[in-house]
Length: 180
Image (tube, rainbow, N blue to C red; front, side, top):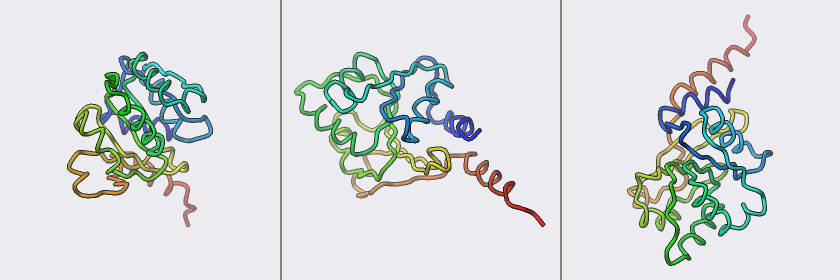
């Protein structure tokens, strides 16, 4: 139920559907994979499962993103830093079809995104910092990241509660409290 609530509450912001292609970059053991797997499958999107060796080989991973036409990408900030180094080390990086990049799992240094913003701007793909703990089913807050955030020197802006989701979680917790 919590997975369905999360994805339903986020749908108005991410607008994912059958034309999207997601990657499952993370291990099944990491709760971020729940977002990747069900974000794709519950909206009729395609899911590309990235083998561990290719996830660790950034050049190979970038090739998968390019050739696979990936539109929805989830990354920990440290994995994305490696991605950026490899991507911009190429004199003519491949054009990617990404619409959204979701960050989670660790603190985001917004300043590290400057090369990305310099190349792609801040509208598409939309970069979004997500925050939550496993017990709340992956994410409970979101924060779209913009170029202006670089000047503010933000470090891991958590954002605001995902609409409707936090209300459902509070109601669920209150229902579990013994009464009387």
